[in-house]
Image 1 (cartoon, rainbow, N blue to C red):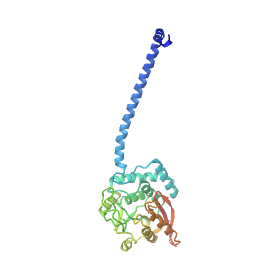
Image 2: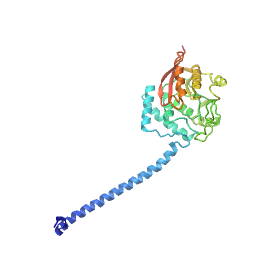
Image 3: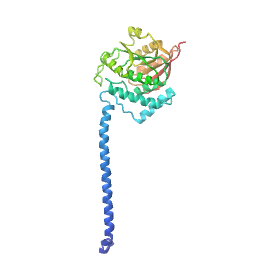
Image 4: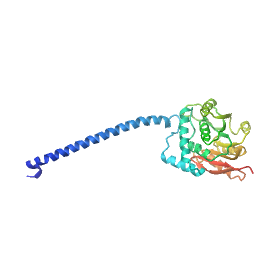
Length: 303
């Protein structure tokens, strides 16, 4: 007779079997409790992610504001390399918080992906532009980036005076281009919208409506030298070349020039124009480097 079927063996093993069964049930209850706790935690995370998604996803702006740790690490390294600053992560973090806050409170959106927008906002103040309060932005869309930039400069002790050049004709439009599709925000590109956004930063500003290549526009805003110039207007090779030639005349000694969408495959004319312009031995501009898809240049003193 097999041992485990013997009546005496079965009686002897019964307490052990009961103990094993008890432990199995106890472990099952513990596993079930842990599973329920994980389900509750997952439900809570889903609720939180819904709220976070409404704040940071691409709905109503075209580009999300949820960078990965890898993207932030890369961005911090680029900012540190071009500026030589040990505070690149702090600057990128401040820039990101500023972008999220202003897009939540403002009307419309900031143009561009998170890395490019935050890269510009973090880098410009760290490049220590001359204590020259004047900032020129060629192409503003809704004015939110300009508002964010004045905030970031204020952190470095620069109380900026902002000049904006943009046609502000209802939509984002390149000269001689077919009218683009409606903006993902559904907001018209108009002067009243820009003014409302600039009011969020209590910004000292003036707006010159028109294209940067219009003679009357240039005459109106060439009354001063600018410590910072953002070139984000006509993205054609010819348009960028024209803007860079004008910038040579109006940027202050040591001023910072930012060329947006540099290296962006969607806008090859930007990179072509910069290469052609810098090949001119008479240029005052020196290429410092690139952060995300923006080129940063410094203006040498006039000889």
